[in-house]
Amino acid sequence: MWLINVHSYALEEFLGEGETPPYAILSHTWSRPASAEVTFREMRGDLAFAQSKPCFMKIYNSCVIAKSHDLSWVWVDTCCIDKTSSADLSEAINSMYRYYRDSAECLVYLADVSYHQPGASRAKKLEAIGQSRWFSRGWTLQELIAPQERHFFDVNWDEIPWGADLLRTLSRAGNVAVDVLEHRHNLPNISVAERMTMASKRSTTRGEDMAYCLFGIFDVNLPILYGEGAKKAFRRLQLEIMAASPLDQSIFAWRGADRSNSGLLANSPSDFASTPSIYFPRYGRLVPFSMTNMGLSITCTLVDVPEEKDITPSRPNKKIRRVLAPLQCHPGANESSSFCLYLESMAELRFHINDKWLPAYRRVRCSEWKLVPRETIAHAKSETIIISEDKQLEALLSRLSMSSQLPTRIGNTREIVETT
Image (cartoon, rainbow, N blue to C red; front, top):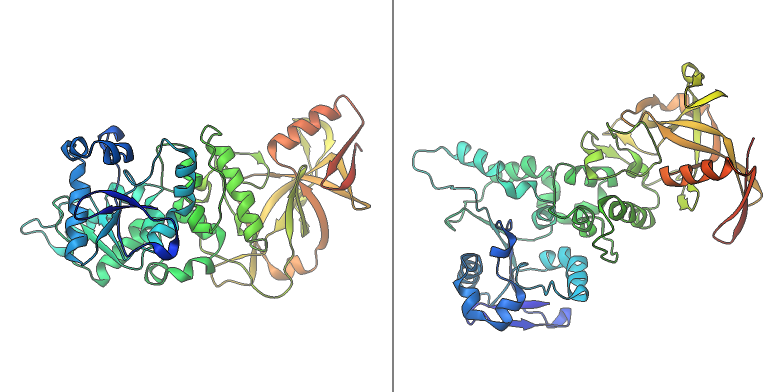
């Protein structure tokens, strides 16, 4: 970890967590264009040039404030990461949440807020704070949650007075519950869907960063692969979350208005924008699920949707079966109902896994769910099924048009895909 000496502005590297001294950390939005920011190479190679750039003032003021708080070191993302080194960049992105969590204090600079305006009421000033661009950026979500101590500053680096009303403003504008802001240790106790909702209206300059900026929110680590695209990066994140939170089915409780048929994985955090508060059980009968190379394997109760038994234009002469698949999660404190997804049977496919034939499904009507009473679900039949993802399903149906049997593998289990 590289830190700035607040007295000399020199960068010094600290290799071990136990060797890192107390430091302040800056949270801000990057200036436009990004080249206006001071870089690691400029701080290391030409400090005089770095000091001549307008954005050096953020570094300077951070150091001044840190010194006034008896701290000798500051971390600033623009110049404390060697972005020309893929190894250094990957380490920093995977460690970012920890950097903010372990800081002595976080200095939040709101470059588009002028707090100390004569005659303006506290309420009007707080309203302006809530409209800051800082709340719209993906990376600042963890910078809001992780630090133990936060100090907010306006465009002139005048400190914004703290208070319960400011905390409520941060909660509303940041889409983060007050108890999480007060006690960051509560973050792992809320559902995956709720954490996704926090990020659902944020954005990043690079598409992949919308997944990478959430590593700390879900306590996962992954390789950084710029160029893979936003959807692939977010898919990798969801698979890692499933491995880290194997019983939290709220990860599937998204609604994509622009999707009709799909697998169970979302395309981006924005798919969770309309997801309400969701609770998942931490006791009782919890059923595991896992992703295979054919789709998600899951055991659940299936409730028939009679009105959906119809002929579909995309599959002529095929009767379709649509069902409701309950997730093991419920809205708020309402434990009497469960979220249910609409699934459609892919009658052409069956998978032979561990000596069992498993039916194939895909998600349909992705823009909606249905709340179903628990007593209705209690009498439904439980089945183990495979819910195929989009590309998996396309590949399977394409190959099935050429062959009636298709040998493949899931892990160490021999599988035969059979047409019906």
